[in-house]
Length: 447
Image 1: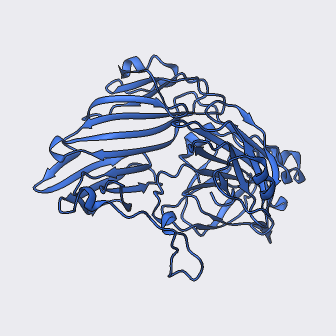
Image 2: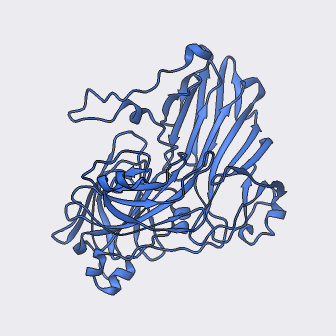
């Protein structure tokens, strides 16, 4: 898959940090002292409880008279060595028609419904709620060290308190704790009320859907109101999005296809680890899921003005390390590696080959590199400046050790790693890129 690692995304903080793997030695960071380089290395957390990442839920609302909705839940188990994954059944909901698949192989997994007391017998689930039932899934393979196990859980919930008719108006009133969600209305309904800022899209079969990212803490207070006055069936089916570009922009904007794509389901995320600013270097890792049959390589086109070094890659599903190769776009075309997109012959490309993806299967890849870019990352006086455009919905930046944030032009959520470094997460629910202008200064030494 062609991409520029300078324009990417990031998931939930705790789970992602727990799953973090950056298999690089810091190229330009070697210019700093060994002590500083060690402090600014990627952070590896060891989880002693169940952890997860990349949660995404799609709700397909059935006829409102049934008070039922079909749930499609994508989740990634990230605790190394875990053999089971526990998915709580929400109180007040009655679950039915459950099934679970391994996302890598597309094969069914064994599962059973257990009580909270039974779940507590698992050392990773000692804090399970005794009053809650859980779907316990037996994983296809133990979670690899610093790897992942991706699951697709399907189930139908009946919950008349969350989904009901108010006169002739459909109401879906359900606080959602998963940060990425899509809700598909029944045929013939249009949205007339929506409490959480969301994309509105039309499914290929004509049903209206809303989709959103919720970057903040706590649950998203979602309330959807809809009425049945829209066409259904063939009359409601949308025309395919075009490759026409925005006519309003003073520059060439994105295509209609790109702008109307669902942001919440975008599966790419990126984390930048800034080294000490005198090096102009930042390490990064970039995760993405490849599901296109026949694709057998990833191509990162290095952004102009940046120098990439020490590329590395792994398949997160299995823990298998991959070999990276540097070449031109012309050499890539001659190599026979299918990266799924065309690359300009003159481009400088880092290529990572892997076994071709089979129909119905997918791979979750982690690409790691060190970038040096004096334009994007520099010292100005006694402060650092990180000025870079992010094109992905989920992005994160970790400041170097000993520095604190003084300016962030784009809104971000902030957390602190156990070693004291500050992490800023930039979640972008808009189709245009986020221009991150970030400034920081050194902390005063503790007295």
